[in-house]
Image (tube, rainbow over all chains, first blue to last red; front, top):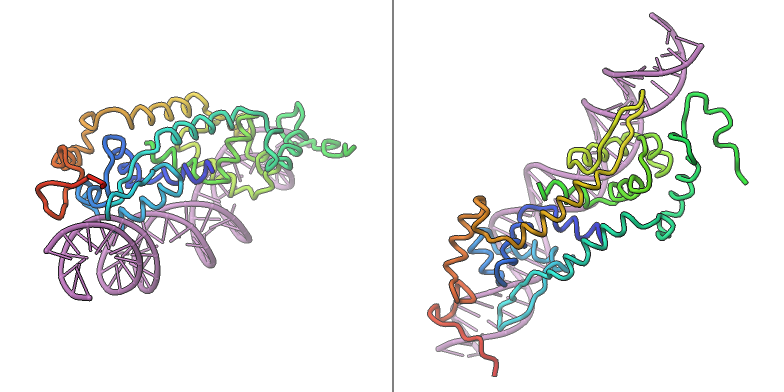
Length: 123
Length: 123
DNA sequence: AAATAATATAAGTATATGGTTATAGACTTC
DNA sequence: GAAGTCTATAACCATATACTTATATTATTT
């Protein structure tokens, strides 16, 4: 989910589209003209932005007017910052990593020169 | 700048690294063990994160201990949200786009059937 | 219904990206 | 200084991505 959003944001053409949509709702052909880019190029980038839900679309006749989904953008970005700070325990996808991280204990490193008895305590 | 950051964030391995660094400073070999990934893989992803300045590094002997650059992450993300809302006029890179956007004026579309007036009325 | 306009999608291609294995470099310990 | 440890980089390969041109789809006007 964060990955999808950041992938969508990590591309110059799409960043420019978002910046323009922040000024004004625009249809594909407007973006085409304003950005001097081909129609498929705009269309394909919009598809990525819509899939990431950063852009909404409404139909007006044969036009598809695009708008910036500010609320989702702000919400997701806040969610991301919260996600980073919340405990690993909250994230089932990272339970393995949590376990291995805990093996570090107070130590600075799993591997050491005198690695000796370090990894032996399985309870 | 935003592009670099978002590109760095838009990849699952790197997101995982950041999440782990949010818990604790770690060296490359720790990440290797915790994530069960190869050393070059970790090293290469860290390079991207360091280039985006999302991760800082300090040397401790032969180790390179990595830490999450929270302040830059928060700062840049806020900058991005501000950037989206500030007027296009502030951005010299988009002066051409600004000009073309202004050609739209009150109209909803540059191109139209009747070119002169646009019908938005739904009956 | 035919012509046109706005948009989406398909197909092809070049480049970017993420992974691997192999090797080099930089410290540390002996 | 030799051996071992930690990290970076090089070389390679497979897949993903961003573009292009060509075509399909859908809505509107006549």
